[in-house]
Each structure stands twice: as C-alpha cells, then as structure tokens.
Amino acid sequence: MALVSEGDRVVTHYFEAKEPGYRGWRWAVTVARASRAKNVTLDETVLLPGSDALLAPEWVPWSERLRPGDMGPGDLLPTEAEDPRLEPGWTGEDEPLPNSAVSEVSEELAALVDVEDAELTPRPGTSRGSIASVAEELGTRRARVLSRYGLGLAADRWDEEFGARTPMAQAAPASCVTCAFLVPMAGSLKQAFGVCANEFAPADGRVVSLSYGCGGHSEAAVPKPVKPAPHALDTMQMDDYSLRPSDDSGSVPARPDGATEDLGHS
Image (cartoon, rainbow, N blue to C red; front, side, top):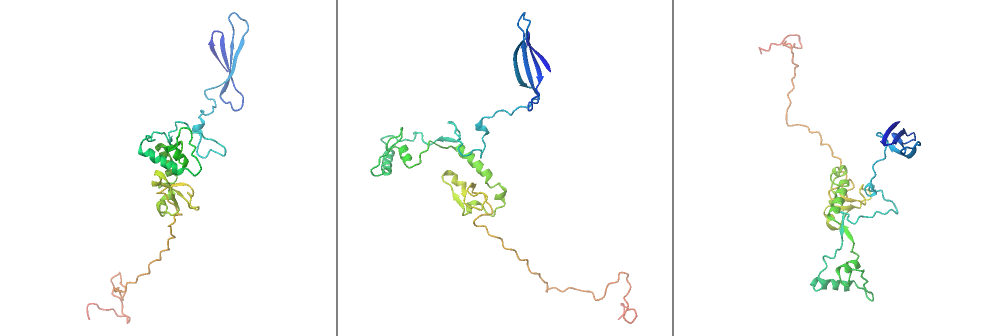
C-alpha cells in the first residue's frame, strides 16, 4: 500500500490488485476534501499498472500485422491509394493529340474491335477511338499496375524461396532454365523467372528462378554404376627371389651332408 499527495487536500491511495492476470497492477483511489469541509469525498477509482506490471504488447495496425497466408475465404485486403508497390496503369499522359497520326491509328483500331451491329460503350472519361477505350475493349486496361518497386519486392521474395542459393538448387543436377517443365512468364520477369509445372517437384505451381533446380529436372538421368577396373598383372618384369634364406648371425649355412660349405674355394 502507498499514498501520494496530489495537491491541497487531495490524496491518492494505492492498493495491490488481487485479480488473476493483473500481476503488478494497483488500484488507485483518489479522495479529496473541500475547504473547511468535515467529510472526505471519493473522487476517482482506477486500475493502473505498476513498474513490474504484466502489460499487453504495443498495438500494431492490422495492415502491419498481416502476414502471407493470413487471408481466408471472404476476407478483403484493400490497398492504400499511395501504395508504393503500385502505379497508375493509365494516366492519359500518353494520349496523342487529336490531329496526330497516332490518333488516326487508334481510331482504326477501335473500328476493328467494333462488332457488326454492336456499338462501343466507352466508360466516362473515354471517347470512341481513344487508346484507353481500345485497351478496355481488348481487356488490357487496368487502373493500376505493379511499379518497379513492387516488381523488385516480388523478385526478391521469389528468389529467396526458390532461387539458386537454396539447398535444393545446390544439389540439383541442372537449373530450371533447361527444364521442359518450366512455363515462361510474360513481361520483364521472364528474364529471370518462370512457373514450375512438374507435379512431383517441390515448387509445382510456384514461381521459380531460372537458376533454381531440383531432382525433378526433365533431363535428369539415373547415374549408371561404375564398374571397377580389372586387376592388372605385370608380366613384363621379373622378380628376384633368394633360393637360400639369409642368416642374420653371419654363420655359413650347413650342407645336407653335415659339412660346412667353404665359400672362398671352389
């Protein structure tokens, strides 16, 4: 229990909290007495954390708490208007002047897209024959596309998971650039990435680096067992063998008839 003076005739009393899960918390009861009054008034009661209180982690916005794989069916993930990973897909800055040759070509393209007895119905902000309306009719118009920053983030993420530095790629017989199961990508990413289409590969249906590889390579072959070389016999050299065993003591070996042999005389 503790007591702290908050001012003239205002005091706060602290009591240890006994509730489960509130270790280190304290009840703070503030009482006050008006000037020349005989009765004390209960001003405020609040539960406050102490120096060693068990606190919840700092609050983090949902956009920063979200991790890959957290989204489920029915979940929505809106992107911010100033998301650095995206950039406008059509700004109108590249729209040619009305009297330019490119504008005449765009009108011809719009006429080719037009079907018999059907009329183009451009959306607000587009006119018949403009590049935006032609792109919309062809199904290639998007409000925003990936920026260079967004492409770089995706490339780093894919290369870290299925790149040349992974243990699987280090032990692979060849890289994905020569594999028949690699489906090329479109755009600038095709220079470094593709999609794996081998159902038995660990990266099936995933974006892989061209320098990635695994044991499911289309040209991988089972190595044949190496036969040991036959034993070689050297028949071109003669080996010398002593007919009489050498005596380390220096004595002359005895003859079969019991006599010693004189090596100095014939």
